[in-house]
Length: 339
Image (tube, rainbow, N blue to C red; front, side, top):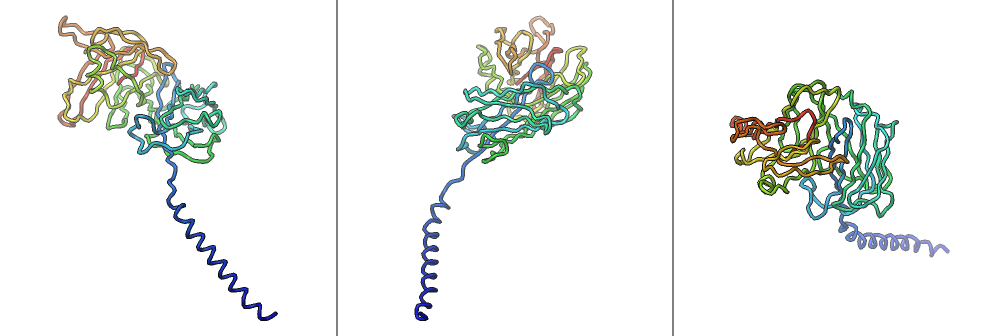
């Protein structure tokens, strides 16, 4: 019996060697696997009514990759969580989530955490690369918004479960809302700033982002397509807002050697207006509200020597000291989207 004992360690060594060989054989296939790409963007814009917002969440990819995205996602996006800033809580029901790509989503507000949760109804409803979901909600507490910038921190996952598996990386700046008083300035993306002044009380809500389009104009559409604000600006009533007359919004952004006079402003307002080409403005639905959309004329009419009614472009020049293009728009008491 004793002569069999030395064989046991040898068998163990052989088995261990086989295991190591198996690990070495398997290792190349594991190291060669590519990690999934999980990227998304998010932007927020106000609706026509005070306290109404729509956040657009997009899975990176599609025919035209958003400039913020570095790669196209390789998996579907299944759930989203939006942390609502204290100034805008609570959120009134209902909260809706609609995908223009036909995906079925559901959304709700959790009063205990202050979060809006949205998710796909099923696996086939996940957002594929290039697809979006529009999450619309109303703040019942917007009248208390203090001056300053508020961030709607947004997270997303590949799983349908909130805080589940496959977390996505936000590639765009986090969605923000700025509450500004008369003379207040908001710093946006691409070095763009927006200053709102005029005879009004309370605050206005300013956000950046959107896809307002005036390329349809038969005379100036192609020029606008090449020369317009780097980022769309959205302005709506905020806390205690009362207008006593027209307001002025001034956009400033870095120039790349372009002539300041080449730039045109695409405007979306609640009331019809005279466009630069006198072509009737188009009616476009933005966040569930119909707006009149068109390219603004200059306020001064050189033919008649008169001043045109608002909205109109009141001044436009290149600031040589800062190398920035400056464009000011006289706005009616109702509030616009402009680009």
